[in-house]
Image 1 (cartoon, rainbow, N blue to C red):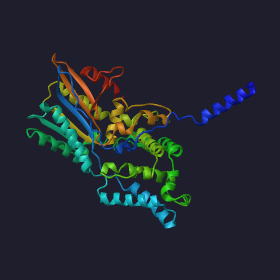
Image 2 (cartoon, one colour):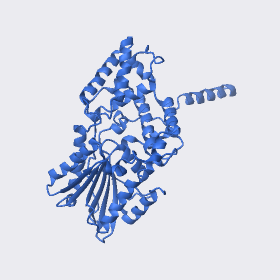
Image 3 (cartoon, rainbow, N blue to C red):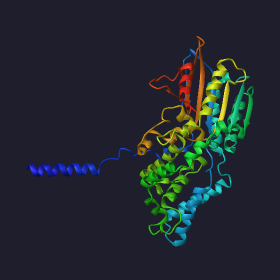
Image 4 (tube, rainbow, N blue to C red):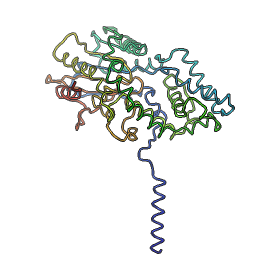
Length: 421
């Protein structure tokens, strides 16, 4: 082979490699994972054990409500509107007719219960409560359980289902339950923080999400249901909004006990790309990012409360129960987890196309997601903290693989995580 031919061969090979190169930021998550924050709770297969030199003495639990019906009819309305136009214009496909029927069946099943806890969500809460009781029965026997909830009905019902299960397993438990807007500073801090409101409405946040969606949200799959002749230019709803509505409607079905053949409407690549758009929105709006630390810093009152109640219990304050339960939202937990720097829940980058590789909403806050801070006492009288994220112990201290951390060390670390105002 001559030098010229060899040079041409190398150039052709390099070009072929470039054309066929795999996108390093592309993901290949399952459809179950792509359901994101609508993913039903992935219960642990086995109970957690601990060294016999440690005795559990207290639990601080913060949980998200369980699986629910769609929060609002917005996405169903967007999708039905587009499908209705396609039907009226004669472009709708057989797949589109099936999708229309599925969406109508969702609306009928909800029957006005938008955002309400459903039977699966109730079962999720009972399951978490049952595992907690089975693991730490000595903390419940003839003891007080203190529980508070956001005023949201699905959170109140999550608290009710959880605590009802506790009393079914041990009727010596004493319950002190409360809910309402007075707990919003702890459970709905995203509602009443001026700095956060300013960030949520900022042009920087809106434009960042919009640019990412325009670059990454696929829309060609809409031809499968609306037909290739659908006139997007003459329709008031952008194609990207219709695509995200279709994704959200399908992704939320399992949480309300419904199934669909999703592959008929979205292939795996489309599923992953649509999920990545939704995942980035959750990340930017509710976690620390290079745009702003405010979405995580607003959880400071809740973290301060977790620290203070644990410290008070250790100091012998009898007003602090052995088991303290709090029920809120995904928007409660995402900021808290980021503020605490929990593994997989805190990620800073200037390259937002890498977020889908490192911050995964289906791991951070599936339905009924929870944090359990379990306090242990050693034979020597020292206290140790273990943190369970979705009932799985995590090594939360930097540069350490230990899941049991001396309380004073953990306390000081979390105090350093708090913002300086």
